[in-house]
Length: 271
Image (cartoon, rainbow, N blue to C red; front, top):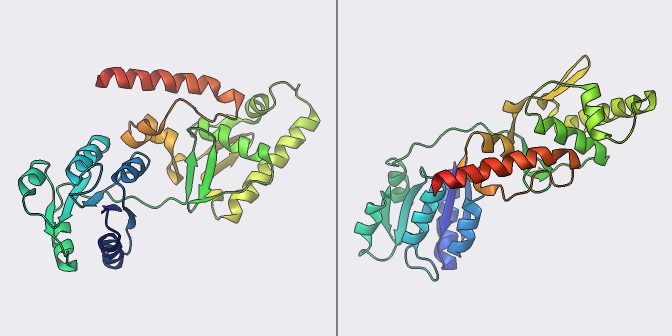
């Protein structure tokens, strides 16, 4: 579960964050003093539950709640405030709770029992792939280091192909498009495959790679990828795409054009 806490006062924010972390040890908890920073975070990461103060500078909690629900409609909202007069407005937004400060642990736990939207259980996947902008790979949320840039590019190509079995010759032609095929080039490719397997093995993630005679592929359900979420119309992924896809690789340009067209069509449908 991903929990967002927003309060423009430091001490209440720290208290609430510490309280929630102690009570819900399996949750990811992020606290922000500025509503704008919380909103920026929510555009990148899906938020299951937001605990929001109401009277804050710049954007109040009611406005923030509306924006969060526009990003992901199933975000549960619990307001934590020192003011009782906003209760009607809060419940008009289908808030799951309206807790008066100081907020007790018992009040939070009780509100959690009556969330409007069930929390989807998501199996933690160790490898996270970023394709929008530059291509990046994270293992347990830490950047994965590649000894060779071409090894990273090999994985990028397999990710773009979304689980399709790619023949060795297809991959070689994409990664070395201006070089004629040769025994030396095939040998270089084999060394890249070994290096990729070694790199993934070092972070216990070699199982994301399918290797059969003459073909390679990634096993898509063993990793998290913004591109795959985009295909599934995940609103966070759709918002994350800003017009660049694997920008460092020329062979990715045709996919970039497809994504731009899909994104434009989505915008036209909404407006």
